[in-house]
Length: 159
Length: 308
Image 1 (cartoon, rainbow over the protein chains, first blue to last red):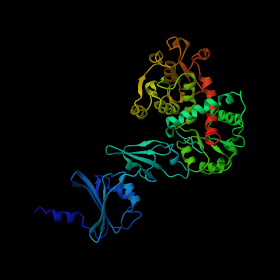
Image 2: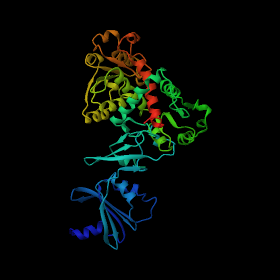
Image 3: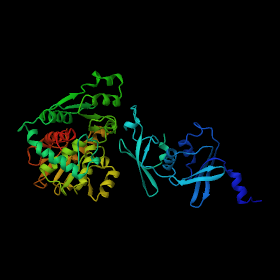
Image 4: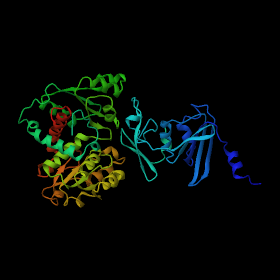
């Protein structure tokens, strides 16, 4: 017997009482989102991940984190690899706040520069810094030190 | 437009108005650079030179520029005799030297080093070359040379040699794009300008054409900018010889040139220009290296607040 939609949804991921649901993550990027959030190393929260779920605009990933509300800084970082992600803050099983990630103008300490000879990849006490621009659904990161541009596979360069 | 305490890091930080102002200031200071007039414009000012890589022209022309204006120069000296040999970071060195001087010229092998330095001190940093990155004072003196020896607006210029790794030509192309230049790129396939720079130029509506030999360009252009082809870029010495000879500038080749053609080279040259060309009206590379003095005088006077 085919389960009905409600049962199917409940079987996949149960609703959470308090925490954050990150929806519409670019398919395949959910594990990188966890990396950005320091999960599981820096966190003991219960986390559920759905990979390749069907969405209105094709496949997507979804991440649910219990008892943790993401701050703006974390959300900005997620936007670099999942620019269409939607952040839902859940309180007492209700959506308390819902907003789409905003691509930040600058990204500091998130990504490593691809230029091995960049000062940000040396032993100097300097944090990587990029100017973020987007070009037709594509995020471009220009290193503010050496001006090298990362245009492909940003997730591979996450710190 | 104020230049006081401005860092000179990358040409991309400068608008056309700012560049024009710097070139105009250099022109006013040129008689002092030639020793025809005396000046104490920078009396009491101290410039520190931190060169972590070899340099002749950049270092000496900064020293001359400072001396001609009555200022003084502090030199880092050999790296072995400094705290850098004890493992001190560049960041710490910059902070310390910032306390000794009114401006710092930095040449360092890492790209972005000058930008980092500019975030650490309140005195202005002048990028004297950061690895394969930028060398803006070279670009300013190149522009000044073009203005003095030819003309700036819509100039027809060919850039020849190593266009892939040559940092001077990348910055120069960007600056020329502000003046509507028509640019011809002359290089063997191995040393072609990176696509992203050509794309950048085309978005500025600059006419860019690429050719393989100088003969194809020489009759049309007003300025020929030649860069050094580095032997070490070629694993095969025979391949280097072939490429170097295909780009050699000879008196014979110049018979086909525009009579007003000016030949520039950032120097040092290897074998790109036949020494017999030095005697022709076309050669202006030694004058070009002199122009580094008035340009650096202008930059120092502006960022130290002695001129507006």
